[in-house]
Length: 178
Image (cartoon, rainbow, N blue to C red; front, side, top):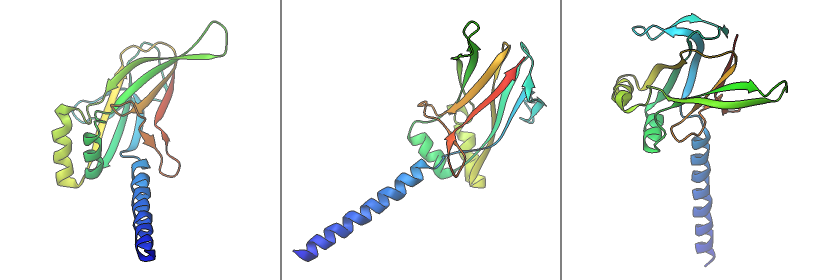
């Protein structure tokens, strides 16, 4: 009886260790955003930014461009969990009257081409050749008004894409449009 109890307890501890490893792996970011730039536009042929900027002018096109990196396991997990395509959720921070309290309203939720059904085959092909994909993707606003603009990067199920390896935080990027 004592041997059976010890064996059961050992199995339970081993299973909880596996569960803890699985939970730790699930907490790690699935994708890595390796580069981010605000720009006026993107060259379609090279997929690189043109006119990188720290501040933007009102009513002039504004692009949030990024490079996304992930491996085969991450791509499989994202696809299986229905978390593709990745989206940019654009927010405009505005002010109510003369109050300093900001009101944030989402203006768009834009599906990125990385992970779209049309591009999934190309991602898989790149993973098969290189063991990972390194994808340049972006979204844009044609004529953003003045104010503070923020983009949150989320999966298709609206859970945030996490950035950072030591203390992961939701990936969010801001720019002032004047």
